[in-house]
Image (cartoon, rainbow, N blue to C red; front, side):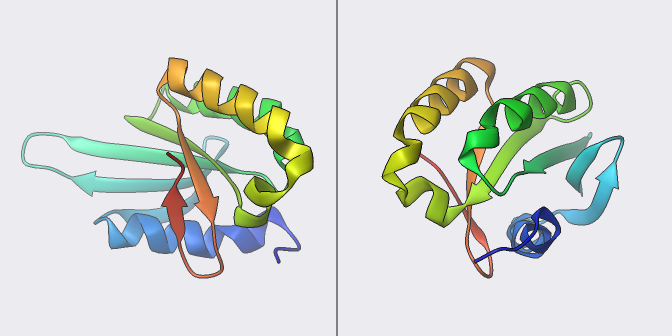
Length: 117
């Protein structure tokens, strides 16, 4: 479905916008950043996009670094990668580590995303 990580940015941006964030491309090595002015503070979220779940380690490492500058960090992969049975172990490890670190996981579809639960 996606030929590049860059192609994944549009649906992720759509998801962030739908949730009330102003969105920008890479800031300080975070692929996509969403900013939302709240009453007494600014909420900043970031997402690291990868085409393959086999790259989960790199995505996770970058998301943990993003947590230093964001209130919430996500890793994002194409929806098809979650359906691929060969990724079962990668997905298990990713979910376990993201749960411990408080990192969200996004399933990227053609137009928007959904949070992995």
